Image (cartoon, rainbow, N blue to C red; front, side):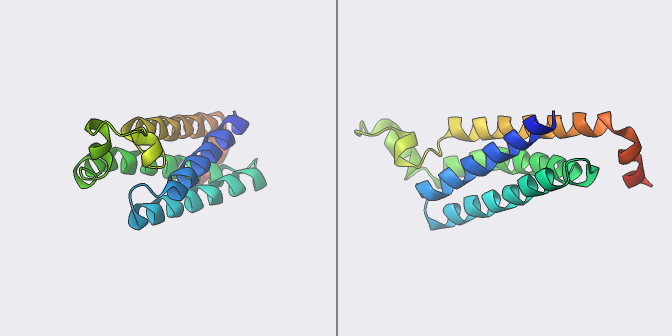
Amino acid sequence: MHLLLVACVAASVVAHGWMAAGGGHGAGWSLVMAAMALACSFCVVDLLRRRHDSAPVRMALGMAAAMALIHVLMVPLMATAGAGTLHAHHGGGGTGSAAASTGGADHSTMFLLIAVELVAAGLAAAQLRRRPEKSAEYLR
């Protein structure tokens, strides 16, 4: 289960890096995506280094839940702020798809990223539940 958690968090790093490098929503969103990729990479490293410690798993749980919430809140922001960029590609009959023109950051990509974050949070919660004695130390 731990390797699945690491894989989910690593997939989040790759997805955020891909969206940051795509730059389809401008420099501001690219910086936000790069910051999210950096935050996720710290979790991956910590999960790999301290495999038997509950602290990195709790951190991954918190970060995954927070990022899923942030991404859910970003969907309507992308719809309103990106009306001139992202949505212009949907009805214009251009040669490229919206995902290709925005570095892959369309709504379906965002929902996929939300799903990855929720799976990571679920795996982290399940892993903490398997180690109740170590989790109980944190609560004291």
